[in-house]
Length: 485
Image (cartoon, rainbow, N blue to C red):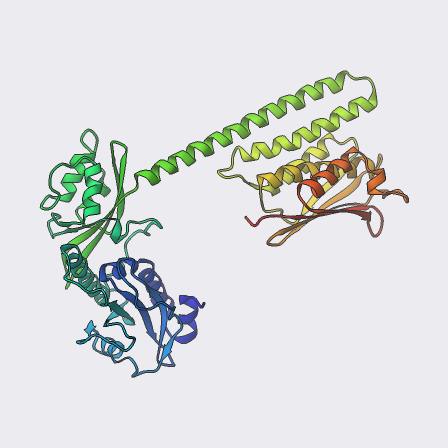
């Protein structure tokens, strides 16, 4: 499906500022749809007539459009209500419901103006399904009045708020709880959900008629300085969000000042009890800190093991035994590097390039053969379950290259990396003496190559290949499936 930006750029002459205003509008017009109990369709003038570039269904009532209409083009003159709103710059309401679809639908159109002094750039079609119409309750009447005020703000270029901070993805919605305030910040209506949220904060009196800012501050800031954002939000003077907490209950508030005809007539305050959500977030933070502490302790223990093995290697007089212990030190060290990185990461994902560079540096430092090792390409971000075996594989391959490939001569080793969405390919290439003529990975592999084969093929479900390098030397190629980060 084409996006809003695609349709605007392809079918209209609107500029970047117009497009940005429309993005701001559609990011927050769920509020208008829910208050109106209506579907919203955003139409822009195009070379073909009018084209629908965005659509929103209500969560508070039945929808009119079960199919998507984004991308629909209508010729000029086919939608008189849209034309009237556009040319007369006013909100238009149809007298009688439209029964053409078999369901009574009330149609309204709202011209969209970009800021107070800006041009009119689009028209919102508001379609209300009247099939379940009944005598409206106090809540529904408040919703509809608030929707009417908000629609007027859209037509005047006052909504969305140009100076407002970006709204959170989990901002309160109309159904979470709604308070309507007058110009003085007193509550004129409180929905049942909003009242319940304040009851959990400790309110025992009636919320209607109270000054919301003072009431909220008295509940939550008795023994500490009052949060300035709270007073702005709870009084409805600024389009912001804040949270208040008392006795373990956390309530999120979002204010929408209502400014119609140049004056502030009141405000809407959306209320949401986020106690359980914040509790789960704190649990996740605690669990994350625990996991990182475990990685830190594992790294420390591995470094201790490596140090003990290193001490033991110095006491052994047999060269083969000393070499075996030194190889064990390098293997333990490569795993410790991964755990050290995980101890600093907020998730179980690793930026592997840093680990690869440290393994390369460690190989060069402990090798008795002078070698130049360089990396070309990027490993990117890898899951911890993949990073640990790859670190060990890289350690083994580099150690084999610098120790067995060059004997006592200086050599060059390249680690060539390429990665697409779900496959990591690594080639470790050296320009050394090459493989024996009768080399067979299944028969002649030393312990290091056996470890590499087990990790790549058995644990990572990848492919391993060893072949002579054109021009002399050896190439070891790895193809490893990875999950996209």
